[in-house]
Image (tube, rainbow, N blue to C red; front, side, top):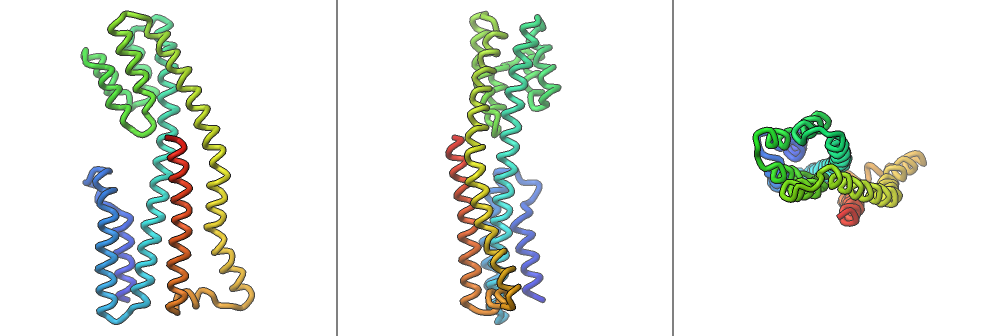
Length: 254
């Protein structure tokens, strides 16, 4: 009973950082929480004379932390890809609106309706502020790197008086080529990711097949020291392989 309570508390602490903390601070805090809760749970479990539940608790805590990390990285990658599409869409919209004769302020308002993240940039234009600086600040968000080129085109056009619509059209062409290349790279990496997920799922299939033959592999894994070692090692290698594939994908994108 005590081990079950500790497991629930550990999983909650590992997967639910405080909402009041900024995202970066919460992400830095999570590994510390995992280590502290895991150490406290191990100390309590050993004190109570329950080494096997303690090991299972630590394994479950590690699995929860690894699943949360992979899920968070996947969600972040999807959000960054959607942001890149938004940047390209807004760049094309700005170029088309300016080419049709609309003033930059109205074009930015129209783009902000398509992508609400541009609202501070449109407000800066309306108040006579630094539009390029506002775009540079927004470009620090994951996936919004293309706004640096848009900001550069806006700044050069503002200083020289050259056509902003033509400059943004050229920037949009460059972003479109980059986005197409990114899709090709992601398509090539999809097979490697699928293979890694298949390899990670094979142990579950093996357990099901062994159970169907009359064996009891689950009991071996959770009731014996050797089984617990195999369980911890196998899960660690599986999650390490998935994390390695995702790391390679991020390195290729950069």
